[in-house]
Image (cartoon, rainbow, N blue to C red; front, side):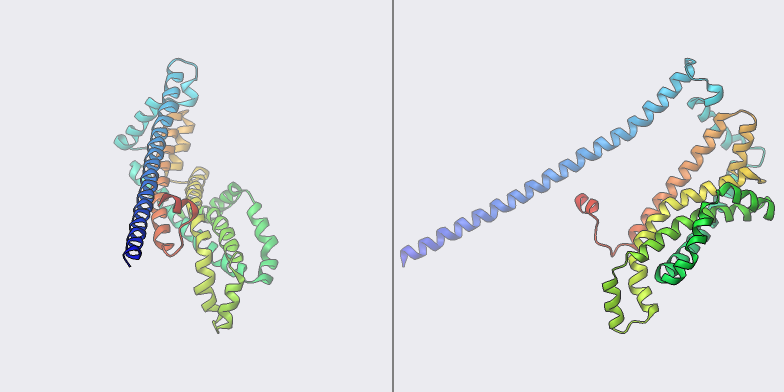
Length: 301
């Protein structure tokens, strides 16, 4: 009895030691993972800071020493002066805030119109093989038309107001969202669809509970690219003909051989696009909160 009790006690002690060893190993792995993440973040931010310093600094030095002609390519210090002048002195077409609002309104309306149209047509054609086969050659033909030609047609047909810029931005956004929505529907697990139909789900219920949630990842992913194209559509429309907007400022600066103002306007639109990208990322996390983390996201946890 005494020998048995001693053996049981030693087994318990060994088990406890192994448990403590496993816990220490797991804690060590987690600590090493945290250190690796911190090192990666430090290197990432260091690279992000050094890259523009090297590029802008090299640009400034090359133009200051005459290696690159600043008359044609601008100069970072003069671009900063042009940016400050836009906000302090305004433009010939009103304040910079007014022109930013005009361009942003055109881009946002075009983005919304193109997104809604792309999602609707993508879902319809993705679920209907016959309709997809009928419309496929016409959609491909429309997608092959150069957008600048469409912009010229819109300006001629609808004038210099907001509507032709919204249309051009919507066309650029539409095809990006449409093809992603279409492919997202085609990638839905058909076994899952069949099981839901066996349970008595109507076509509307299948679309609501299976097709749309499955395609949502594709659709949201396309929006990141789509907003940038909405900005491009609005700017191209303004370059072709407008009464206000950042595109008109760029055209005027081009006519005056002023590359610094052109670059300053480009910086403004880049900042707006980055802000919109951040907002879309927040939207993606909220809308797709039900989705399991991807491999990259899981590694970051």
